[in-house]
Image (cartoon, rainbow over all chains, first blue to last red; front, side):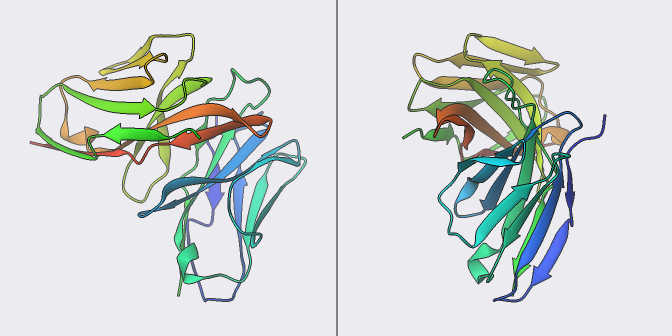
Length: 115
Length: 114
C-alpha cells in the first residue's frame, strides 16, 4: 500500500512569487491535512480537507489556500511569498470518516525556501 | 485552549539504556494520542496510536501509556540503539470547529551514542 506522496520535495522561490504544493493521500483516505513546520513555531495546523470541502482551518493569513480533488489529492497554494514562509510543509492523510478513525499518516514533506 | 508539552526537549544517552519521554496536555477531552518519530528534514512516521479509552500500546521496543485524567502520556524505549536517534513528537486529536484536528508538542530530540 503506497504511503502519502508529496511533490516536489524541495523548492526555492523568490519573495512575491506564488507556489503550489501537491499531496496524494493513501488510497481510500478521504481526509487530507496540511501543516507548516518551522524551528521557531514547531508544527502548526494549516487546514483540513475532506471530500473536496475544507472542514477546518488554522490561524494563517489568506495567502495560504488549498483545495482537494475528487480523487482526494490535495494542493496547497501560497501567494505573495514572504521570507517567513520558508518551512517544511507536511501533508497528513487519514480515513477521516469517524472520530475514532483519525490515525494520521504523514508524507515526507516539501521543503520550501523563499529567498 | 489545548496545549501539548514535551519534556525533556533534548536527551543524550548511551546505547542500551532504557528511557522515558514525557508528554502532557492541558485538556483531557481528547479522542486519541499519537507518538511520531521525525528524522532530520523528513516527514513524520507514526509509532503508536492510543485511543482515549485505552491505557497503553506496545510495538516492539516501544511502549506508550496514556493517563487521560491527569493529561499525561509517556513513551518508553527499551534497550535504545543509535538508530533510535531522532525527534519524537506527541500529538493529541481534539474536536475543534466541528471537526478533529491534531495538536502537536514541540518534540524531544533524542541522541543515542554508541
